[in-house]
Amino acid sequence: MIDQRNDRRTMLFTTLLSFVVVFIMWVDPFEWGVFEVLLYPLRLFVTYVHEMGHSLAAIGTGGRVVGFLVSPDGSGLARTSGGNSIVILPAGYLGAALFGALLFFLVNRLPRLAHALAGFLGVFLIGFSLMFARPDESGAPLALVLGVGMGLLMLLLAWRASFFFTQLVLNVLAVITALNAVLDLWYLTRYSDATRGIVQNDAVQFAQRYAPLLPASVIALIWAAIAVGMLALAIWWGVWRPLRRELDETLERIAEREDAKRGLWD
Image 1 (spheres, rainbow, N blue to C red):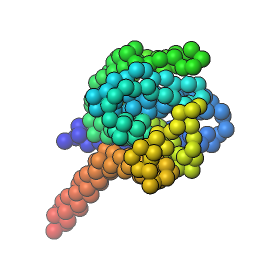
Image 2 (image 1 turned 135 degrees about the vertical axis):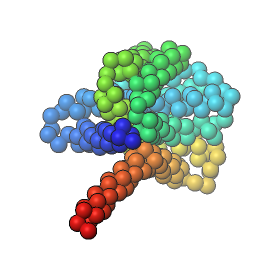
Image 3 (image 1 turned 120 degrees about the vertical axis):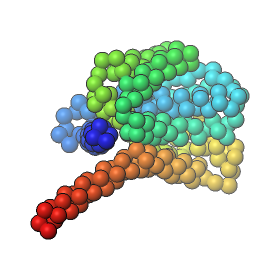
Image 4 (image 1 turned 180 degrees about the vertical axis):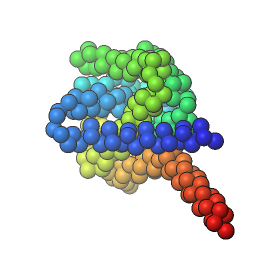
């Protein structure tokens, strides 16, 4: 029982610290500039996860992946063949949101499996990148470098890092991925005509094919609401319920001590 309480307290502290780290990196209140440098590869990784979502949706619906790429400006493109496009098109943004929410939930509900989770993620990213990552239009193999680099980092965490540091890194990665997915969708609600060259964005393609009566901005807003819901559920089940349990147990112990004191005086 004591070990479970200690695990919960450590997990809650790690989660709170991860939100503080993400906030400082995002806002850069000290104007150091170094956080912008740190956020850049993480932002590119969110694009990687976005394209990975399209790719996995294609595979999951019976299609195949021709390849996917990530460009230095933060854009990306997944080329797939076959599959169900009604699933594939939203799977970029919603896949990134799901990746962040699910990773956040698993790290916080199963903190002792942090090393195993990092190891699995590392092997998966390396294997997926070697199979499907392709150079961008300039010939830069950025998607491959991102996937293999992040995969090696995950393996290093699993091999050498402490549980606390591994949980912190995974939490930061989860929060940044989920929040970026939501913010990207919010951007899309205001700039629904955004394109990558001649390739229209996912919301526009989805609206043209499956919801011609709805503007692309409304499609993006619906996806954003789903993404927010995923993150909210992850926070509820991963953090709030354990926190409430910790508070209930603390109040019970206080009540028991008060009862014991009254017993001594009676």
